[in-house]
Image 1: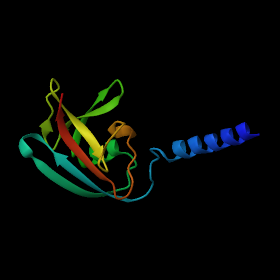
Image 2: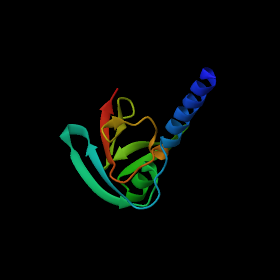
Image 3: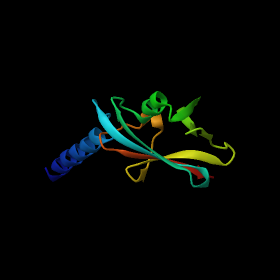
Image 4: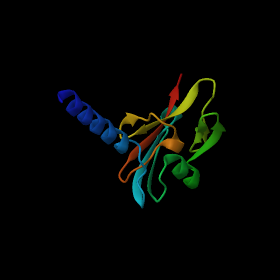
Length: 121
């Protein structure tokens, strides 16, 4: 009986974690998009959008350009600066945490702060 109760609790916990992760929020959302580029370049956009995913916001506002890759679109250019593909990339930080998904799969919510930061490898 204890084993069955433990399994039920475990299943409910897993279900709640899966159900809460990366779900798109419908309706109007207010966002802040910060840009941290080369040579100390900084910019900020304060937006309202009905889009559900960051990739759609970036494409619609023309803040960033993206190219299609084998895993979906990836950010190549932000605010007119194209990352050097041999040593740079645009990282996505959402609410002070590095994104674990690409822009097209990254669901956004009202009040999110997103940073597109030029990074090197």
